[in-house]
Structures are given as C-alpha cells and as structure tokens.
Amino acid sequence: MNEADTQTIEVALGARRYPVWIGRGLLGDSARWRARLRGRHALVISNTTVAPLYLDRVARGLEGLRWSSFLLEDGEAHKNFGNAGRALEALAALGATRDACVIALGGGVVGDLAGFAAACWMRGIDFIQMPTTLLAMVDSSVGGKTGVNMPAGKNLVGAFHQPRAVVADIDTLATLPDREYRAGLAEVVKGAAIGDTDFFGWLETNADALARRETATLVEAIARKVRYKAGVVARDETEQGERALLNLGHTFGHALETAGRYAVLLHGEAVAIGMVLAARLSERLGMASAAETTRLRQLLDRLGLPVALPEGMAPEHLLELMHLDKKNTAGTLRLILWRGIGKAEIVAGVDEAAVLKTLAEATSDHALSGRTIHP
Image 1 (spheres, one colour):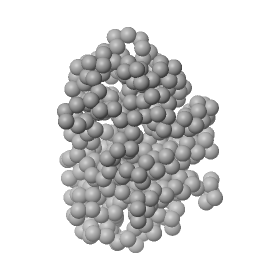
Image 2 (image 1 turned 90 degrees about the vertical axis):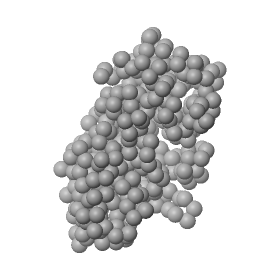
Image 3 (image 1 turned 30 degrees about the vertical axis):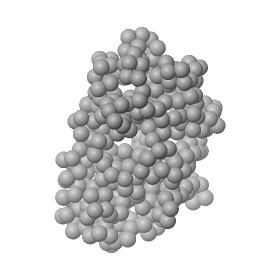
Image 4 (image 1 turned 180 degrees about the vertical axis):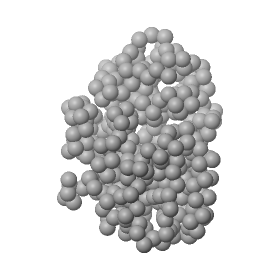
C-alpha cells in the first residue's frame, strides 16, 4: 500500500481539526506525523507486548527530541490510577513542558490511559494516538475519550481530550491475535447497527473477507467506521446527545467486563454480547422484531464473536453494576436500544424488571446460544 492508498479522514470540531490516517507503513512515515509534535519533549506510552514490536519504528522518528518511554503490562486490569500516576511521574522525570506530546502506541488501554495522562499534565498537553489493535483503530483512538477504571466500574474517571492526530498503521494488525482482531470487529458492527443500514449490509456481504483480514476490505471497513464516528463526534463532542448512541451494547458490556474483573471478556467481546442483549430487550419492550436480532447475532457469529453470556454471572449483580453507567440519570437506567438495524435511540427510565428478565433468560435458556466465553 503506497501513499495513494492511505486514507485520510478529518475530525472537525469547529476550528479544531485533526487527521486520522489509515494505511500501511505509517509508523515509519515520521515525515507525516512528526510535524504534529510542537515541542521538544515526547513520552511514548506503550505496553510490554507492543513495545518490543513497534517502539523502534517510532523512536527513529523522534531523533533530535528529548523523549522517553513508559510501559504498562498488557491488559485492561492495568488501566488504573496507579499506572496513570506513574505515567505522570515519567512526564515529570522527562521535564515535559506545556508543548510536550504524549504518544500512545498500543490498543485501547494504552490510548485511554495515555490520553488521560496528557489531559492531566499541566492541565492538558498534546497527544498522538498510534493504535495497534483493530478495536482502537475503529473506536477508542478517535473522539477524545480518555480515562481509567476503578474496581466499581469501567471508565468512571476520565476527560474529553482530543488527539493531535491518529496514525492507524494496519501493518500492526499482522501481529494481533485472532481473538483481539475479532473483538475489534464488534465495534465495526456496532457503528453499522447504530445508524447505517447500508454499511450493515456491506458487512454481511464482506464478513468472510473481513474474517480473513483481506487488506482492501479491512481498510474500507476501518475508514467507513471512522468516518461515521467522526461525524457523530463533530456534532456532539462531549456526549450531550447523539454521541451517546455510540454506546449501543456498552451498558450491558461494561457490567459484564466489571463482573469478570476485566479478565474474562475483551471489551469487544463484551460489546458483542451487550448488543445482542440490547436487541433482545428492545424486542421485549415492543421496539423491534426478533428478525432484527437474528441478523445481528448471525453477523457477529460469522465474525467469530461471542453472543452468549459467560457462565456464572448473576443477573442481579449485572443489573447492580449497570446502575453505575455514566449515561444514567436521576437514579434510573438510560440505555441505548434500537428499533432495528440502523435505528438506535436513547431510552430513559428503562423498566428494570424487563432488564432483569432479559438477563435471566440469557442465563437460563438457549436464547443466546452460540459462541461463548468460559471464565
């Protein structure tokens, strides 16, 4: 893939704009991304899995700057206050000034924590996203959501802090394990399920090619999802309305992740199951048909994603965890449900009995039979 094959999508937030570059060889294309650094200090935040593979490519582009690296252990459990504090200490040791830049080289955990550290240091410095997982490329690296987890729930502490650029080098996906690759596809499906029926149909047509990681199909899927999200973020940067729709499946999914102590399900896997639960709840509330749920389940299954609850998760505990979701208001559940593919909407004051019944059925019958994850 050459320069002409690199897709550029602009995220426009009034006078503020930044590019999302999608293509091959981009980490080594320092002439492209080095221009986004404004000062002489840079801190690369990565993890112990990604850094040995790709840190050298980024380091070559930082020659002449004062820079250092800070590495996390791999996994969602390490996106916590302790590591955020250590990242800030690394900035202090570097002597980072207000024109310094944090570079996030890794998946969503690295991107969220690096962005949060950048938002906190001197009340906000630049950062660049260099996502190395499909999930991060299509979702978490775009839009400026940053944060850390707490034992009580996921992403309860964070800030909106937009990157200076997103460098999505699809060469990094060659080393991505199959399970993590599939988890990223859940976020691609989510974008189509929320508001793009044509894209959903395209995914159904191209599911096998995506599962095989065919380059042209993969780049097109990433670009279509990023373009959709960029438009939503431009209209609602801080999630006061429309942007909340991007959380389809997330209230269920975050509860599943928390119940499993971030060790049972990957984020994308939890979102896949959460979307199916949201679709089934929409059925129960008379908003959508069972046929729409079936299409969603079949697509997720073709892409190798779980659609069944992990064993041993109690519905009452999951409902309790769902109450900590950031979308809730005045102590009532506020969920993203749908009226079918491409027709998601925000529903406030959702009947808790209906939610509990949906969760209970998912644990006691075979309504969600299909791929599952065993703790």
